[in-house]
Image 1: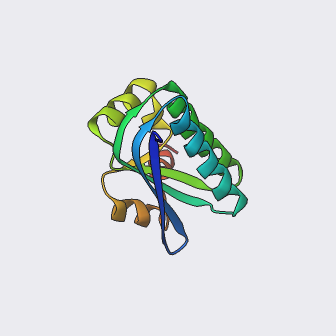
Image 2: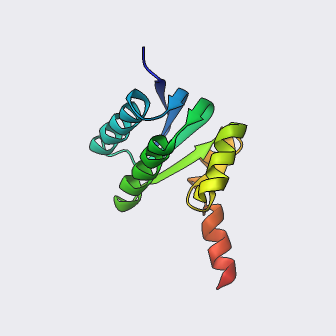
Length: 128
């Protein structure tokens, strides 16, 4: 049995990964790493992760999220998160990753964010 189920779907040029289970040391992290690698090989550049059904993320899982973000960012892509569970939201706050990832409450907001400036870009522009 795996710790993480990943279902891929598309909305135009955006790839959405619905994650269910645990992203932790072992199979969960390995599966997510492999998904990011395959998406990178296919040239996917706009990725949304639906974390609504993720029950647990450990430091290894957090590392895979950051690794996926870094890989996509280096190739001109974006990785965004939506539907964080309460537990995932707490983890992102504690680790400071909410300042790294664009996080949205629902999928439609997230999809629109790919066609407009991200919230971080708008905030950064307002500081200039």
